[in-house]
Amino acid sequence: MLKATQQLMKEFGLTPIQSFEVKGRTGTYIVEILKNNEMTCTCPAGSLNKECRHKRIIRNTLKGEKYE
Image 1 (spheres, helix red, strand yellow):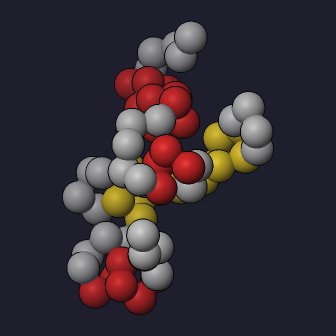
Image 2: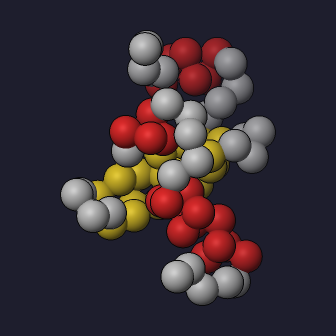
């Protein structure tokens, strides 16, 4: 699996507009919201474009909901 570099992300219009640090069970991960409203996460599941706990935390926080 190739990791996207900043240059490739710029070329495809996937530059992040917001970035958050989320403390996980095994470390701290970075969740970014891209221009196309997709989310990326640096955790193992997020690296495979799967829905992860960290993305849900940010999504619920931005909606004003409490994450359980």
